[in-house]
Amino acid sequence: MTMTRRQALGFGAAAAAFAVTGFRALPAMASAEDADKMVMDFTGGKAPESGKIMLNTPEIAENGNTVPVSVEVESAMEGDDLVDSVLILADGNPNPAVATFHFTAMSGSAAATTRIRLAKTQNVIAVAKMKDGSVYMDKKQVKVTIGGCGG
Amino acid sequence: MAKSKPRVKVPKSASAGEVITIKTLISHEMESGQRKDKEGKPIPRQIINKFTCEFNGQPVFSCDLDPAVSANPYFEFNAKVNESGTFKFTWVDDDGSVYETENEITVK
Amino acid sequence: MKINAGKGPLDPFPADRSWEGNHVKKTILMMGAALGLAMAAGVTVLKADPIDAKLEIDGKPMVTRTKAPEGHPFDEVMSGWLFREPETRSLEEDPFENPGMLSVEEGEQIWNTVEGTAGKSCATCHGDASESMKGISAHYPKWDAEAKRPINIELQINKCRKDKMGAEPYAFDKGGQKPLTAYIKNQSLGEPVSIDLSQGDMQAWWDKGKEEYYTRTGQLDLSCASCHEVNMGKMIRADHLSQGQVNGFPTYRLKSGLTSVHNRFRGCIRDTRAEMPKAFSDELMALEVYVTWRGTGLSVETPAVRQ
Image (cartoon, one colour):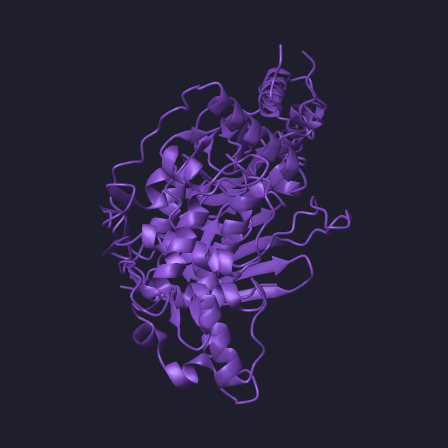
């Protein structure tokens, strides 16, 4: 079989693309375990429940450098029904830590939006810590696309 | 490092007890510490590490930032206002610089 | 069949390009290869149409689709905004959320700052930019009779700095060049692009730019038209190919922040793995004249937000 240089490159790249997507047991830059540990540090060892917190992320991020994320926690934000803080993590980044939001009764509602960096397709995790000590978690996968040219 | 004044969007007026939305944007590279220069030397981390919003001296919202927050950090959050007063916004840089801005709101 | 795919597939951190930027070669190789494969094998590239939506900025409607001028290869010219994901589009819709506006504000400071031996700022001669610069940049590049070549806003700024202010001209992408250009162009937000080809030798520069546009170049043997005309609207890997319009430059790229048009041209040329012409060279000025004309009728969107 004879191939032109470009065809050879093409097959090489197709193989490369397959290797990248098909081979997951790579040495991860940060592991899901690191993120789990950070969650536990934040909650004081308590396993977070699901519900109450809603994390909003794009399904596909056009560029990993600027990915909008919003979080909202169900709470009256008065009396004893208060959200203390929300931890945001990205479990595939070199360091999973992203940001921690702190709320008060003057926040009116426990909702915040920011823009974050995602090094690759991965889970974004949000954990809410309530004033009464209960903890809630939501997790969303964001697919980070590789651009057509320089990426 | 901030090249322009921080941008803050706060309504000029609100009714007592209203929950308003605040948006903030500041110019900053948020150098992650993960990058290398042309000679292959790591570029040291320099980020905004803390953002706070106070109203009449009381904390409303704050955020601890890690290098995974995008360049030109943007925040959108809410505040419940019961009286007229002043919002004070503060950004703290790794190099110790502090950027501040204030906005008045009239509550009817 | 032995294929040398290079370091790429074994690279343990394939996706960290946005953090480090030193994997450019690998991604270019893969992109070129994927495209090369598609073209060589006659594989149909995934089709994805631009969206059907209206763009308004500050309540001002933007022309994002319009009938192409006579002699244009397309029936309709389309803004790159129509090719982007909803999150990217919404960033441009709200001037508060648009990070490019930080540079526009920086540009405003520069506009009012005295520099050079003549003790002048831009404002000394031109006053309030919102009046004096309104609509101006929609008609650049334009013929400069003195220099006997077309100039863009960047070069117009440098001309003023040198001749009127007694200040050093900005080096490419340095000093206040990008923010000041963004500020001046932002004063024409919404104005339809139209350049005057009847002045001086503009037509000859347009011809030269057109020839460049269709000339295949680089190791990947691609012309501007290969992506932005022939495959416009299709996907190149995960990226949606636009018409490559320049009506939003300097543009805020999620990838790299505020980006000048000549930087973008150079980036595209680099990605074909060709030698990059210098910024403001005859080659790139001719290309800017021609590509600007290809966007005739689109609103100035500076600072647009793109991927």
